[in-house]
Amino acid sequence: MTSFRIAVCGYENEASDKESTHVELTVNYDKNRRIAYLYVGPLQVADGWETRHITFGGRSHLTLEAMPRLNRKRLDALLEQVKYQISDKTGPAWDLLEAVRAENGLILCHYTYQSKLIGVC
Image 1 (cartoon, rainbow, N blue to C red):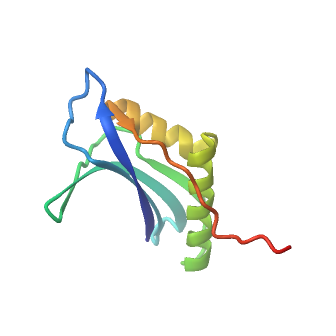
Image 2 (cartoon, rainbow, N blue to C red):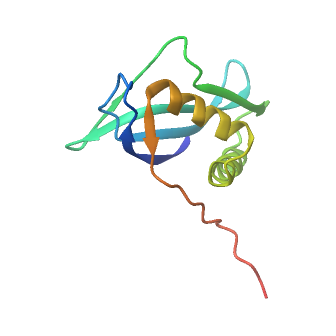
């Protein structure tokens, strides 16, 4: 499981949940369905405790690709793709983040992506 978080800066007027401090994006492997998927969900971090808000019926999962067996390097590569899509504000990962953000009435802080790749001159 690989993940990263984006901080919540504020809430929209009609937001029902005004306790979330972050949105967590997790790339994980489902052994039964043999897929790599992205999970996006709100999270509250306070006093060293993490509280996850689990919702049913909402859109929070996205299948990224079929994966016959667990490949941690591929999960890391998929997480890098997700980070790029979020910073570029394009692609299915961005669409899922926007759906979860709108569903929970969250205003997210600006996210920028720094690639791990180093250019060689």
